[in-house]
Image 1: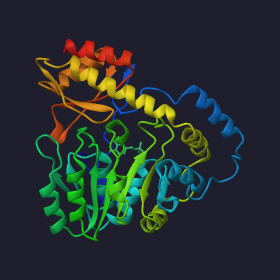
Image 2: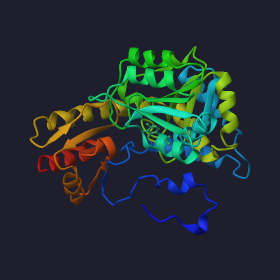
Image 3: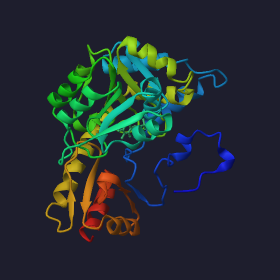
Length: 354
Ligand SMILES: *Cc1c(COP(=O)(O)O)cnc(C)c1O
């Protein structure tokens, strides 16, 4: 704990108390620590996007709420465009959701959970309620239902597939939790990795005006550098959410690139297919390892349980391979993103020696 800085008393206590986002940038030529797509946006599409960008007036503001991009996303997702809300990353949307419905209320979610939910709850003064995932990381349906029944209202957050465990729950379990959420809750279904799971919760969101699916261009689309995510929801909830989203948040660079991506989405499925094959290849290759266990995952990453996770982390780092140590309930685990086949070969080789 660092001493409070008395010069900064005007910074709200919640902010001073909150630790900074827990990420240490490190050097390593095999980068498997941020669940990024290991392949850049295809070069032919990059060229098209640059032409599109060059033709745009850079002196003009972009759309107020990325209206043209929302139309394209709506067509791609078969969704009512009035229910599409685009923002500069789904992390920014998470902050917006906590601002809209978490402040002064609660954020009911699981432990563990994607750290941005906890960070924003703490910073903005929302009460975080964590229901522990079951031992196998499946959804604690009864525990969540009890928390919803006793709760004061706010946000209910579920990640499917789950981050950071990679687990995917049966839709029936997700539905059972949703059906227990009263009108006092906005339900966030974070589907950042759904392409890798072949899962899709849009049907649970349709007809539930208080639910939304959160999606991102950072993972399967390979565009983490652009920082764009979106919510699929009802027109009514989208209207409220847009009031909280900053105006002109999606810039002309992102607009230009995403228009091209959405006109040529075929590359995504190809890459996802490859990633799934790689995920299963790594798991098979490390089956029966005496000191390591690869957990099943439905994402573009997996958890690795190790007798001495710190030592495995250092060993991988010494081979130029960067992975992400986990803490809290996941102490003793490393989170590993899928790389290219060549990178995954290096990972497997290094782990066989660990
Ligand atoms: C990676 C990730 C996101 C995506 O975040 P962006 O800010 O859009 O890059 C959202 N939710 C979860 C659970 C994630 O793991």
